[in-house]
Image (cartoon, rainbow, N blue to C red):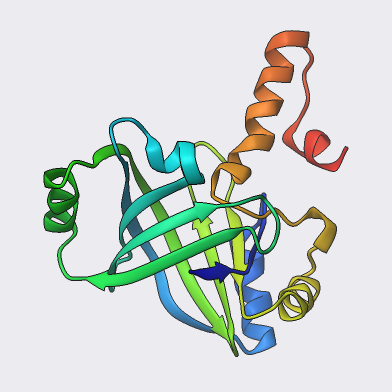
Amino acid sequence: MQTEIEAKFLNVDHNQLRKKLIELGAKCKQPMRLMRRKNFDYPDNRLKRTSSGWIRVRDEGDKITLAYKQLNDRSLHGTKEVSVRVDDFDQTCRLLEVIGLKQQSYQETKRESWKLGDLEIELDEWPWIPPFIEIEGPDEVSLKQMAHDLGFIWERALHGSVEVAYQPYTMLLKKRLTTGARYSLHQYLTG
C-alpha cells in the first residue's frame, strides 16, 4: 500500500489562499466541484475492527476511484491507501453490496484542486465546519516548505482522515454544552 503523505490546516480563507497559490505559481487543475463518496465495511465492521480500514468509492468530478484506506495512526505517515479508477459510481457501490459489504456512510463535499510541482493542494468544504486545506506530496520536507510558503504553522498540521478536521469543532461544542461558556472558534483554535 502507498503511504498518503498529507497535512490538513483548518479554518482557512480559500479566497486568500487562492491569491497566495497564484503568487507561488500553482495552477488550478479543477475548480470547486461537488464530490460524493460512500464508505463501506463488512456488516460486522471487521475492516474497522481489525485494521482501522474501510473501502471508499469516490466521484471526484473528473474521475471515480475505488480505494481501500487504512489509518494506522494520526501521524504524517500513518494513512495507507490502495486506489484504482473505476468508471461507474453507482455500479461500483452495487458490486460492493453484492459481495457482502455494507454502506457505512455517504458524504457530499466540495473540493478545488491545485498543483505546484509534485504537490497537490486541495481546498475542501465539508458540512458544518469551516473550510480547510489539505496538502499532499512526496515527502515531509516538501509539505513543510509548502505549508510555510502558504503561511501555515507546521506544528498545527493535522494528519489522518477527515475526522481530524471535525474533532476541534466537536470538542468546542461539548465544552460549550458542559460548561455553559461562550468561546469563539478563534479563541478555541488559538488557545
